[in-house]
Image (cartoon, rainbow, N blue to C red; front, side, top):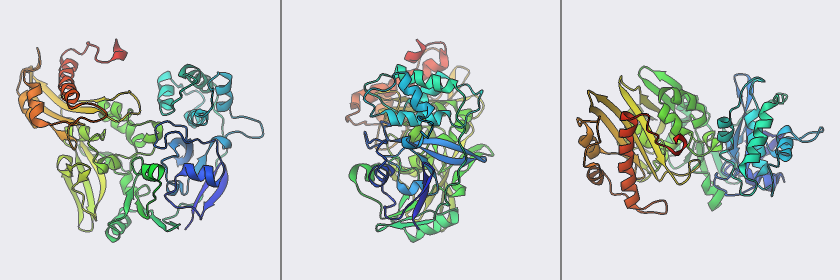
Length: 471
């Protein structure tokens, strides 16, 4: 079955294009829509931003995505809009006009992506909905500009959000396929968990594709496709979000954007961290299950899951099972997942009374950067002493890990006056960090100890500013 989707209102069938061709390449080389630019080809700069429409609650909701790492098979059955599709017989779209009138463009290379981010920001909001500067900055964080400067771009966003949104006619995208074959590639898109497990058992060597924010770099940078792939994005059982007893359950195919509101309400520190995972373009694509499955030592969610003592729910031909995520992560990008198993969901226990969760990410820039170091802590203090502590770090070893020596040192220790001596020694017993292009081993060791001291300040002197923004 050929990939079919709506592109700027026109039905497109990509019968002659490989399913793992990037959307950016298809737009520029096959459709000659060259307004969408390639900058970094790795989902960072936002020059390639497009809008993807999805039906939510009977209405069309537009979300941004980086077309440079988006696979063509991922937009099957969707509606796609590029910068060429915004204007009409009446002229430019307001998002384009206001950017030009605010002097928000110079060389113009990044401008199409910025326009698409502004477009998605205003779509679907009520006429009286207020858009704050924080909303604007978050919406534009995935669009890097090196010549205009951000003030006029933000001014343009303010002006656009102050005007009533443009109401567009609804459209009906084509029905998505379940078996996509072209150019020697086969991409399978199961609809149920039973179908997914059966396909995984039949094709254990197939690449599992969730959001492809990691795998998408292979066709984008290495120019290699996926001969055989299985997508998880349409499996209903993998889209669960909500409480089941005392556990918040996040299906493996739930994107960061879809789960953010629920996670933030339950674990504010985790929500704040999710807002720093990539950009809005990445968060609409990347999934919680994908981040866990890649088992990166700097995967942003993993230390938090470890600190919460979370579980992973797996399924295979032999049935379903659960295991602690601490046991699931077994090495550098290695997990305990069997070749015929899939990740179904992540289960986060509710915080007990008196427990607090903290998570801090250190990176060279605040937005859109890979962690140099990430520390997550679940802490309970009673009577001035630490009665329970779970501490986990990413970027300190070949995988995200708990810190048992540090936990033993602090549990039972007095907490009101000063953190106990021996933090560095305990961390040295737990980790032997490496030096790489992001940081030296000495920096990581020192920064990890300082995050523990930051935990002390945050819980004993809440009025002390801990970030530059608070000064």
